[in-house]
Amino acid sequence: MQSSTLRLAGRKTCKALAALIIPALMTFQACATWAQSPVATASAVIRDVPASLKSIGTAVVSRSIVVRSGIEGELTEIDFTGHQHVQVGDLLARVESRGHRAHPDEAGRGSIELRSPVSGIAGSPLHHVGDIIGPADKTGVVAIGRVEPISVEFTLPASVLPVVRQEGTERHIQAWAYGDDKLHPLAEGNVLLAEDGNPRKTDRGKLEATFPNGDHALSPGMRVDIRVRGNGDRAALTIPLAAVQRSATGYFAYLVTESRTAHARPIAVGLVSEGIVVVQDGLEPGDIVIIDGQDQLTEGSPVVIVKGPSPRPRPD
Image (cartoon, rainbow, N blue to C red; front, side):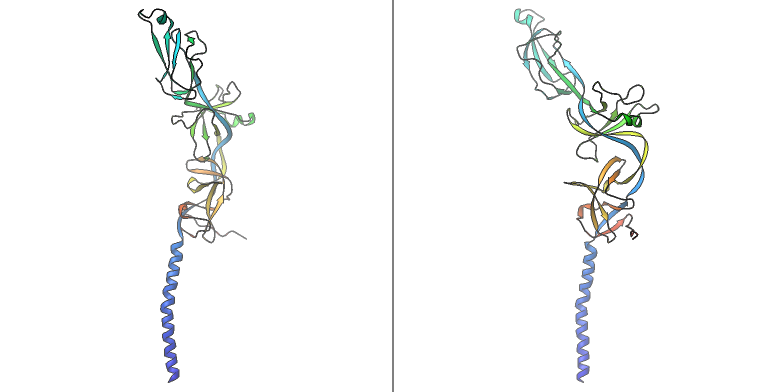
């Protein structure tokens, strides 16, 4: 009788423990699944990309316009400062005719306004208030540097110039100017060409690319990275641009490990073309990178792939 009682008590105890343990295990499993961050992935693959060359260049005004007085007279007012952005029609200075000072009541004489003929950046004043100037004055009152378009001067080794030589009837070679962000260019333009289809050199022996610059992203004196489109294509390791992240120390991409966790891998990036970026260092073909869902990740975060390829076990 006592033995039966003990067995019954034991069964009740087991049931009570099961009632506590099983829900706890289910909750743990649910929490573990919930903690996995959903991500979309893509593979690092080798593909043909446009050939390109890199250089460092300096932005310069595309053309300077000298503003002169149309009459001989005294410079009575200067209405600009050096390096000021001016628009077409902006007042630059006033000049009072010398004849008007000698004969103030004589008709047809007086002062004139000098206004900017182009939009651009004004240089420093070339005269002072009180100076006598006129049409024959070679110096002028100011030189306005045009920045729409703007040019960038750069160099390339002579040995690689045939690589960028433009063949056929098209008369331009694409060029991109980059700042600190190596993924998104500040401006897109073209290399200026000579009649033989080769890049044209400036008086200073530099190559020159011109950019529309309507948003004034480039300004005179700015140092930029230049990438020039070459002829043909080349094979390179690539990933989607959406996979590339940026930190204070540089660019990186999240990889999915075999244990389904996120690993931040530093990478060196190259040319960006149509949503694809060339990876110069840091990845291997077949690496699985995360292209969506990175905002919720940190190093080692568990992930669940909801779209895209999964990592394959690497051979020993």
